[in-house]
Length: 253
Length: 183
Image (cartoon, rainbow over the protein chains, first blue to last red):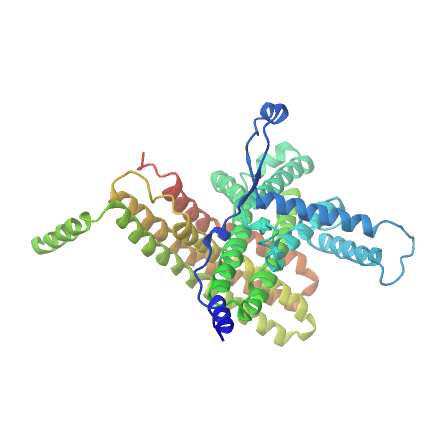
């Protein structure tokens, strides 16, 4: 009976562990001549970065396995068939959102969707505390970096396809006094991309699930995970990619 | 007028007896609560989007996949104001930069309260973007071949409509992290 009472005690109404809401330092970059020259000696490396490395390694192994024995006609049920179907669906999405002739964006958009989907679903991995895994998109650094890449893509491809004269003139459309509003709007778009993904993953994922697991240890957090982590995670990854495609194609026309 | 000013002075002197840290913590708690009033906006907006989506599916049952996709897309963008408010509330509760600063207690407390009040502006974009989502879902139902164009215009309009919400977020973050009145 004592065992059961201790089990019930541990399952319900604990205080939430607020240290788990922020990424923890996994190791520090060692001090040697190279890192001193680059000024990164003794810099803390957090679990966001190490989780991203784990995702990169997993995706690299998966890609190698899928394209190992490259056949012209893949047989049904093989990994190459599945990956081929995935690539074709991403190409169809890019074509329907950005128009014809924009297939060069498929690698970036596809990488965004796959990386964000896996990253957002890291809250489901069992034993993620032991392996020191943390949802990488629940850190503003990750989402800001991706939004910065999108920002550079928007303006680089906008200038390249429209020419710098038309690009600058478009800031004064439709009326000349709207220049500051257009400027702030262009800056606010990637910022809202970063904050939307960060807020959804940190607030709607890490914090809420952390609090829920402290209150009830069994059953109910699993059902809540279906909405907060799975549905919200996949939807936000999709939204990020769709908005990236929309901003790039609008700037290029 | 004399009685009112006496009452205000009495209240301020009563507040002044507490330490700065108590004042900041109390104001943080109230500010975090006030922040979430912005949840009114996305509630109304996403409800409108859901209603328009249901209506469109009722009229054009063969396009229900397109309609659902556009409705979810627009509703998720309308959610952004609520997410911004949640982020500010979590910053206020779990990693408050104002606690532990050496400054007048009233100024710190007012900064925390002001950051919370600023996020109430999220009501507006929530309602507006939800309206755009509903109208987009409705039109995609009747003309599914124009889905790409409709979604692009909807997302463009929603992004422009988000700007006042961004302004509010910037002001709240300035008050918390780069406050010009706290040295």
